[in-house]
Image 1 (cartoon, rainbow, N blue to C red):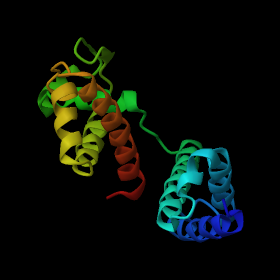
Image 2: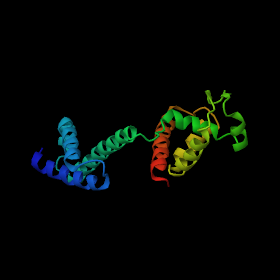
Image 3: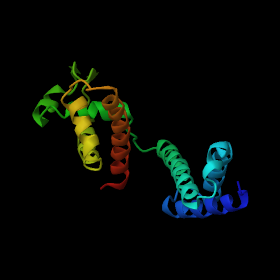
Image 4: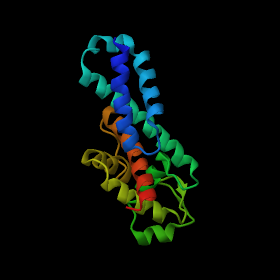
Length: 180
C-alpha cells in the first residue's frame, strides 16, 4: 500500500468529518482512520489502488469515531440520556392511552416489568418524536416487537429490533438536545 497517498485520503476525509461533527478534531479522526487502515492493511491491500474504496472506508471509520465521541460527551454533559432499556420501556407504554398512564403512575406494570414513574409521560413524547426520525422498517419492527408485544418472526427480525432500539435511543437523545 502507498501509505503516503492513503494518509492524504484519510486526512481529507478527516477534515470533512471534523467540519460535520463539531465534537472532534481532524487530527484525532485522521489518527483513528489510520490506525484502522494499518490494522486492516492485509485485507485492504487488495483494493489499495481504488481511491473511492479507501475514501468510503475512511468515512465509515471516521463517522464511527465521531459518533463515539459525541455519545461520550452526551453521557458526561449532565443532561438526561435515554438508554436503550428506557427506550424499550417508553415504547411498551405506548399501548396505553394518556388516561391509563396517568392512573398507573406509581404502580407496578406487568407488561413493561417496572414501576410507572411520572417521567414516563415525557419519555413517551420523546419516543414518539424519535420514532418519526427512524426508517419505516425500524418503526414497523419496533411497533411489532415492543408496542404490540409480538414475538420476532426470526433471528434477523430480532437483531433488527436490537439495532432499531439503539437507533431509537439515539433519536430520543438527539430530540432531547435539539428540542426539535
